[in-house]
Image (cartoon, rainbow, N blue to C red; front, side, top):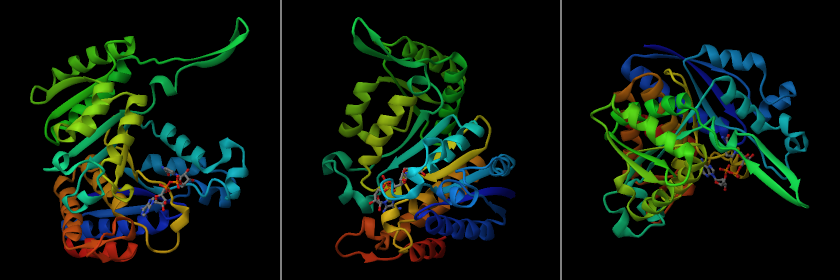
Length: 360
Ligand code: NAD
């Protein structure tokens, strides 16, 4: 298969971690007889330095014409970098928001997986983490409270603020379908999270999710209130496969889920639209404090590349091979500094990439 990949190395550790992901993709291409064609574009601080803006229209056009986007990370030190002296619309993050909007990416996927070898970093008690956990949080990204009308006004001599939470049937339907499709590739279980005991928007959410579920008879569906879900994540994370939820609930729950895995350098993510296209990036930022030192953990980015293989290119066995190679490297005792523990072997960013390629 031939695929065109737009590559955005970005800022900080971005170039270092993306280089390792490309090393792994090249090894996948060689082993499974695929051709990956990479086109680099600039976004974030790197684009500001060259073009004066965090994302150009030309760069967006290149991304639109490709099959998927692989992103490192953007942004700099928010207190010292001159990028943050610019007005908000010209700062690095504005490039990312513009790209997400231009590509119509409405579904955010964040896996939370506990590696046996990294259990020590998990803040939960051992009796809870026995048997590990492996869940996927699917968060709606373009609707809800963060995009509704908002206002602060004076009423009877005091300030009053409101934010509007709105969802349409079509917005709920398209994310629900995506959630069930993903569940079909996993353990076939969806927990849909809402606050249907209070909110109208949640009651509509539940109605539409139930309708979509009828097209997926193999998938088990459970509805859970968001407050209960927040508790269940730390009480019994093993019960979850796909968590499907709206924008703000997903924002909060995905951070909670990532926290219980123990390491930010291991967490991948994807932003999808309603076809195969997606943008894939690690959940962490550009880590300016360790940039250029060749010590960053490239695994989150390599796992994001594996998600790209699975969700944009339908290359399931290739994605699993990458995931297994990572597991093997950890089992063999190799660690970057962020996940280092006693008795293990510390390696650099580039050596970690090489070790994963060797095990592929
Ligand atoms: P960060 O995730 O970059 O770093 C937080 C801490 O985790 C730092 O100590 C860093 O060294 C460490 N860390 C992060 N990734 C690591 C890795 N792969 N290996 C080893 N250690 C790692 O968060 P921050 O410091 O709050 O933000 C730095 C910049 O990143 C800011 O400009 C922020 O806006 C930006 N950011 C970008 C994205 C994105 O591109 N999607 C996301 C979050 C933050």
